[in-house]
Amino acid sequence: MTDTIFGQIARGEMEADIVYEDDLAVAFRDLNPQAPVHVLVIPRESMVDLNDAPEVEAATLGHLLQVCATVAKQEGLAEDGYRVVANTGDNGGQTVNHLHLHVLGGRAMLWPPG
Ligand code: DGP
Image 1 (cartoon, rainbow, N blue to C red):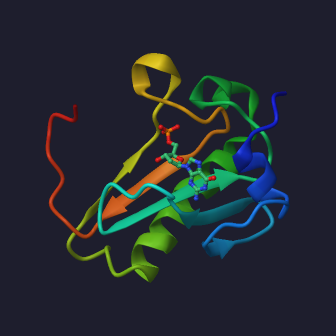
Image 2 (cartoon, rainbow, N blue to C red):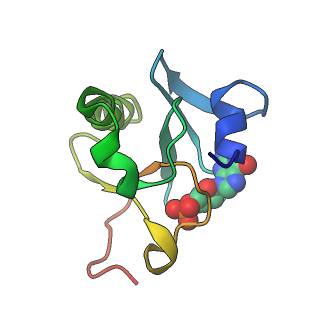
């Protein structure tokens, strides 16, 4: 499995502005925010992207969504709404090969995305 900067953040080897963490997941602010609130939720376990999902514990994947909801509530996004995105592969615009969910909020999102 390729090591990435997110793997280093998950192991506490790289600094990040962490807003939530537990045994399975870490959530931290995106370095290049695309919205007033932009948090990345990653599994501690290394997986490249959603293509790995069938081989991963379903509970871990479900937990990542629960962490997104926890973070959204914590950041005051729950009532007005927010967007959760998993960019996957080249066409998805993925640049870091460690599964991550973007939690974006604090403004109205456009649809369709670019
Ligand atoms: P994606 O394009 O879906 O792979 O998103 C990767 C995001 O990660 C991008 O929005 C910028 C962010 N990012 C890249 N390197 C770092 C870093 O070292 N720290 C933090 N906090 N965010 C990073």
